[in-house]
Length: 365
Ligand SMILES: Cc1cc2nc3c(=O)[nH]c(=O)nc-3n(C[C@H](O)[C@H](O)[C@H](O)COP(=O)(O)OP(=O)(O)OC[C@H]3O[C@@H](n4cnc5c(N)ncnc54)[C@H](O)[C@@H]3O)c2cc1C
Image (cartoon, rainbow, N blue to C red):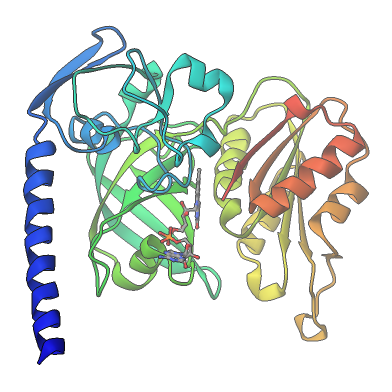
């Protein structure tokens, strides 16, 4: 009897407390209408307070880069607060340097709109648009990588630099209630303005990749925002070294095709590292380019080739393969895309060979 009474009392207490928390939340989080001023009046709008700065800006069609969809795990959504909004949060600390902290830089996903805000963002972010698209084609490239071709419906064309990325919006599916936004590098050429191609690797348990691989079909409508990113061709250097692994091939494909199409006077070596033959894709495509263009060389390499792979090409870690083919960093730039581990190892090897750190560019994912 005493046990029953205690359980009942605790349940009632918990219900009352939950009610009080909801009431307090409703009252405290009612921030009313707040004004957001961007770049000293370049854009100014009134919004309902209470949401993150990242999502509030997106609701006004101002898209800040964010690869993790607001979880403070990518550190991309930096904005400069021109007036203080309180101390930096522990979740932001790993991504904000001392210099940035002094300049008022914050992660837009961690700042809640509770008052009028004055912020500064790079002007080019005003050019980022949200696109409504139709999935025109899906191609299975390997056991875990698919290529998606999107036809742009509204707006009908996109301007981007080869190497940049867009952010796809997923939709709720199965037990996943949330819609997330994730970054994917464009693998098609900028001259094809009405289409965008992406190469997406299925991440086991990943929200957006499971959505794209298992819940999207040809003909479906998908939205994305873009273009974002500063992984694009820089001036200087006669020879370009491209190194990629997995879906990191995407921006490299766009860069190579763009350079060939524009007939730029550059020599190119493209190293693609995979474990087994089944992880290679676009082999025929790049071999065909190699045959057609004397300034382009394609070097796929397997790090774990088995006899049944019947592989006669390069073997070993991609870093060793690069070291065998690239004598020094003189008049060369390197563009890398792949996992953080691969990028770190390649940067180490390239700097040892003699590349200046300022001649190495990368996007890691
Ligand atoms: C600039 C840039 C460009 C990119 N370009 C590409 C590209 O061209 N192609 C490409 O394939 N990818 C690309 N990415 C990576 C991409 O943005 C996504 O990070 C990736 O596809 C995973 O997204 P997801 O939603 O499927 O996974 P998420 O849901 O974000 O999960 C990622 C990992 O976390 C694990 N996880 C998720 N939730 C939990 C949890 N609650 N507890 C424990 N673990 C959890 C998942 O199992 C998974 O291993 C790029 C990233 C960046 C930053």
